[in-house]
Length: 152
Image 1: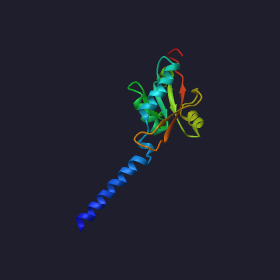
Image 2: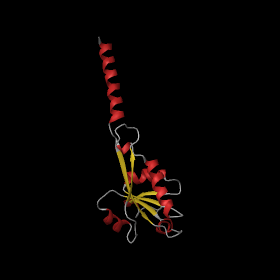
Image 3: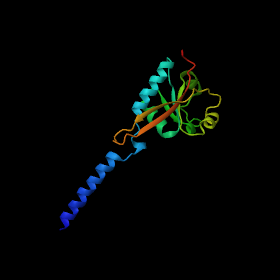
Image 4: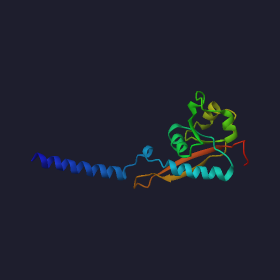
């Protein structure tokens, strides 16, 4: 009797796990960062002949997309700018940056962490989440700080 109950619980547990994995949405773990990087960089390259040097903004999406953007790009959260020895304002000026931020306080953050930097109007890419059948999409808003070290 005990083995059959254990088997029933095992089968039920596997069924719940499969249904949960297939249909539940775990946005943070399913962000399509590689596709977002590809689309954002395509937009960047249509406007500028160099850069970007940085992906800057809120932590999660900025790190994920910035890492996927390639070896020449440094991903930084706003709060890291002041203390990061690898942040260089001249590099930002020459190569520009992609700023990713969904926060309503975007302008205040820019004034605090990147004072005096001009940025473009917001653009967005909307991409389906990975590993789910829900059809849910993840929106990546971004702005550009134009590079000064190359042609536009």
